[in-house]
Length: 394
Picture (cartoon, rainbow, N blue to C red):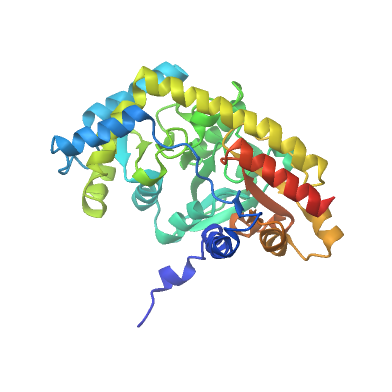
């Protein structure tokens, strides 16, 4: 069978490949005194709040399971619009909001709508691998621009200006970022957007971890800049609905009919049950619970990262959001006689029964020296992981 060149260009999602290996080993050690601790997948250990679960059950009982509009329930778009106003003091009309089958669908739709074959999209290195693959699937080319800890592993306006070429179409940023948990300072984002606008390009910002910001100076939506920003968001992370596959995008008014036409053909609509359930995310009881959980994620970060630093797994930039630690493992590799972060991750998996993610997924700029820890697991699991890592590395 002939496989398309498009499919051949998409690299494996190494996060999931490592997860498969960890799961296989976990079965073998499940009944030992050291079962596998999973710090590799970016999935909250919290599930959807009670009101959300009740709303889903009610939707099923009431037969609210048929197709919605391709752009999503108007009531949900209005709730999201109100959330932007209440949380960020930013006015985002519901007419600019399109509900999607997860943030993945939103990124796919944005790339399909805006990228021509051969167009180049600038992205920071390191960055979330699937984002560049959405660009590739639309026959564009992701251009990874190396970043450093001094720039919080984010692009600067000067880098965007220097990297812009004749085929550049725009930038795809993430704030907070996976794998680093760092955000773009609003002033830096404004400068980047000015460069992009002057070039006639597009500024696309992945904000799926925005609700999980811990510092006021960074916890601001890019939509505050102007109506030309395209923002991607999700119910997976802050709203704890990973498997429900529901997200949204905010686009300029004139782009909505284009996105709607594509969504009608590619997805028909997002999950109806998930949409009715998500309405309950914005009830005061649910929002209060989300804020409690956000503080718990912050407490996990504040405990875990100093522990990593003390073990020589240096986190060069304190993450201001999400639930990741981007740690330099080169000293530990040298001590153990290990080649790089890929081998280091498998070493810890097999010897300490702690699953983490090697840097290979996230780019090529020094990613062989870095691993990503997820702090989305419980404090108990984090404490157990620290004990095992200390016993193994110190």
